[in-house]
Length: 513
Image (cartoon, rainbow, N blue to C red; front, side, top):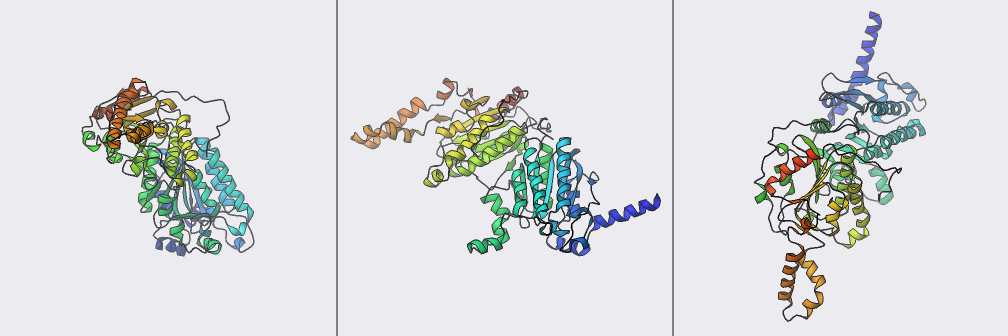
């Protein structure tokens, strides 16, 4: 037995160490090795590997002479802050992390185990796509991954961490998961690489320009989180996992709270101007009311006219959707609608209550918006809110105009409680625009058109846009002192903590995707 154990230890050590030259090349690129990444992600000593000795069984094109252990992917389970997670990580040192039959079957196994155990799944991506030498079996392996991504969607949290290249069909798996992290400078995602783009279109573009962290964190919206290095990235993955429930049958774990639950928010009186035409930073409002000022923002570089992220109120994790008046006056456009819709769906899937902070002048006007499908994309956000069964709280800070007011979780589409500040203006449109429409002929015929317009604007504002108009009609539950916003939100969340989730008998809705 001792002889066999010695042999086992040598085999394990060889598999763990890998090729020295390949390791040097990996480090020369500023990248950690696969096991260093797992050590950074998981609690010390908690990793249990599966199929360490797995090898491919392909032949031809020189593969039969190269059959390294792991087949280029390290898989297993470990813990993050004492809670179990399944993980698989590509090893770029072996076949460039390319996926073959055995490689794919290992990934299928840990995905199935994550579903069976009801624990989150984390993938550390650093691979060159399908293993060309294995032909269509590699493509079938990706199909199995995609099918599981979809089947497990909304059941267990799925996190994709992009630490290197992810090309071709491989890029679809991260797009199907709940959260995508990218490391600036080393991670790239694209369906067709620069060479193909150049051959097909004549455009000369680098890997980073085509599919780097900036492209997907600020332009395409594929990546929700962009970080400067691998250590910071994996640390934030750990933080996100600490916030989320293990699966859709659990509530998010309670978070430690040293912030006073009855703390008043005096700073809000100066942060938010009463004049609806003046901009301010909604992020400052969020940090003022959240526990300890902590806010974990999603898609911080994309569609910045709407803010999405996670914060705690009295120790209860809450998803926040908020208009950002500093960007496009907080108007909703195509990208903002998509961003907020996906976030709302994620919160609803994993039992995270939603707080919506409203200061919206409407949907963004423009030919490009209309032709780009703002109706369809705006409907995505409307659909997401209407379908959400988690506790939903709305706070109207200032403007809430037109269809955008309805879409931003108004009482009419099912929010549980709606509060408004005394500066709220809930209306079909702004007073100036409304007066120009309703009194257009009268203003045109007046001796003093400007004076008549001003009088009618004031009349419309006084009659239909005063702070208590919506409350008088039951569309707002209470007009509150801004300084009591945090207390109101915490008490509302406590009230709604046991809200049941009601499911319809249909197979699924036909979303405007």
